[in-house]
Image (cartoon, rainbow, N blue to C red; front, side, top):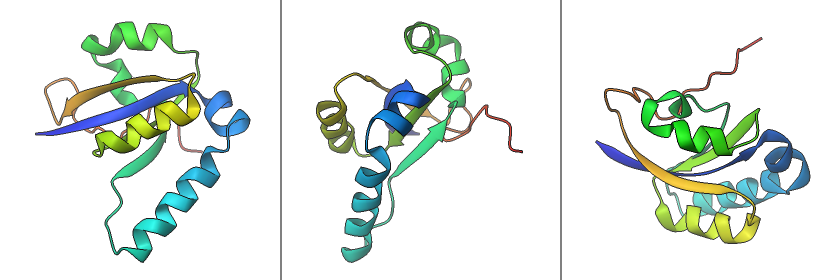
Length: 109
């Protein structure tokens, strides 16, 4: 089982009000230069929030939401400091209530 860390906020805040795309693009470029495998993902309407143990977190976050999920805790701490108005946390997966840590509840059109 792997521990996943996240920053969570409304999609509007993360995708429109903050320069998150630029931050993630720069991080991706840095990983490519260092030949490091990606360990972070942007997920709209993350399914892990549907788990019963995440009910209080889901209740705190404006909908629709988005999350940056990573296996690198330091990256998530850095993002929290950079973005400020986000929720952070962690969860183990796969588990009985979170089968796929990167799953989205957003319908693909």
